Image (cartoon, rainbow, N blue to C red; front, side, top):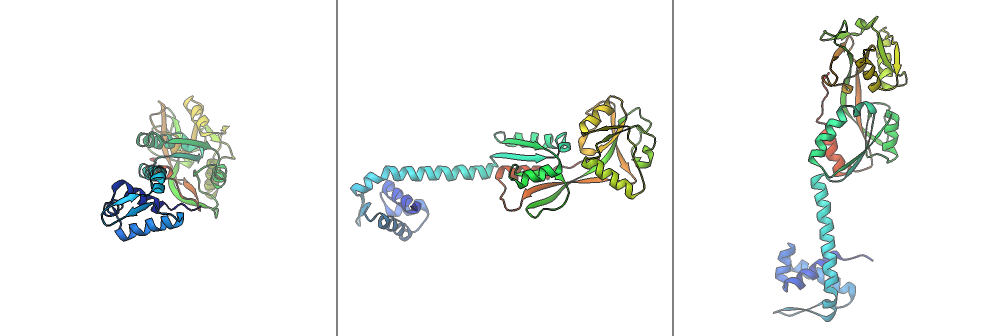
Length: 297
């Protein structure tokens, strides 16, 4: 059964205000439109809800019986619409985000901290995984939004560039290269290095880019995650080449982050959204804050 909300709203306004003129003004419609709405509702019920004369409007017995329920319908609908509008205006709601782990070390916490101050009631759920796992999470509906490295385009994903994340040299200040303002890849020859796994996207990008230029990076230690590499460097075990986003200078006393040049290699971080889905207001507000973030090498 299709509920004629316009007709019910018109009936309640007329009944409460006792006048077609006042009801039409309240609903911001013409008296003719108001009359048609009421007539349509009465036609649907095949009964009269109001008796009107040139001087007054009176409820029929059926109209009096129906009025409390009609008021409830109008109030519930009005409240629901106002709540929905409030959600849209305030960016209220929950977000499910899939993200590569390296973005969770500094970048994402800084954005989330700012977001939570503006939207304190919103809830964020984060799944971390490889770029392929992030893509699958967005495709399968497990996550509304994904943060991953640029890769093969998928027809059902909307992929937009977000950050260019340069690879940098992380070392202790007492390292022979620790006082430089920049370091070339050839300067790393003979330096004891901590490398991330050959299956990690950062390692693949590094090896591919260097192979194109006939360069090679020798590592003495190999770990699975960027955070472990940072821990080893902080403990005095070698140096590392890592994405700039994984380390903010000053977080670990005695460590330096130095730009790598000749060549400068940047990994491209992208935002992923389902192509055929509309972003929630909460996610749209979060994406807006993400796009304001920049990385300094």
